Image (cartoon, rainbow, N blue to C red; front, side, top):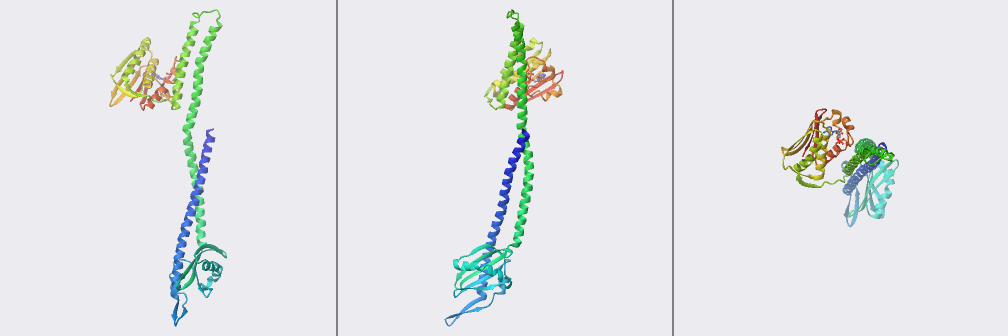
Length: 426
Ligand code: ADP
């Protein structure tokens, strides 16, 4: 399921990447072309003006006795010498209703003929034009500039072949295509990696949730089976009185308590997972909670011949969720008493370098190294404790969650058969 999701996410990402790459590549290509064409247009226009200026110098008229005489000087050598563009020129004048080509390079006459219609149009429309036109085997960029001043009407055509640029354009296209494809491939690989990492917590949560549901069903099933078995015995004894069946009924009853505790803890964790459990923060005396919980636990400890010691600093005030902190204290002290036989449980609350420290130490069964990292996991119970009564394996995971939401640290030090110490630092 997650493999499919992983591929799907990468595919979506890939699609977005491809569209983005196409967008970027065409953007770069078109923008470069537009800027280039614009620059060329400006250059060609100024070149046309320059050519026109030289034309007027080299081909000038003078007036004598009321008539104008034109003197054809021919295009100045400077016209070509000062050429700023690798371009060719055609110059037309408008004389006696005739369009007269007055200059073109000798070997470029054929091209000049082909583009003459553009010059004619410029005379007719009295405006400039800038076109790219196929002449023979090549494309030509043609700037046609129309002049109308004291010297009369003229048109200057500046044109250049785009063949060498086309090589550059097709090279740019190839470069963009290759970098686009390889960039997409690299980004796809990276996105595959990142999507894998992104769905990992979801996958882990899903796996944990599945295990949680399975464990919860299993844990609920056990007391239910015990209840059923005990009630079956009671039901099969048709003649028996309640007193006679007290043991079976007692067993069933104690299992309902286990179930109730389990359901209660499951609900807390379910709410914690759904982030529904809100903190009800208030300021209260932590010392009072510890004292109160320990009063009850001391009785149970005494019954088990466990020595109970309380080292309490008075009036340790904290800001936290009262009910949750009380639950945390109950879980730790209850575990210490539960997992200690004839030993000692020491509960301490003190302030150490601005930190409030709550520690529960016992000389009980201890936790072995392989279990210590897992005791905060849901339903995890160390082997030794597995068969003990009343345990659900959820207490410490709730305690850890309570510590975490309050940003307290909950740590454990333990040695098997020596004892354990759980410390909450606030
Ligand atoms: P349980 O309901 O089984 O006590 P917890 O989540 O409270 O569940 O504890 C998980 C496991 O951690 C226990 O089953 C036990 O193996 C171990 N554990 C917790 N507290 C102690 C302790 N004080 N001494 C030894 N083992 C402990």
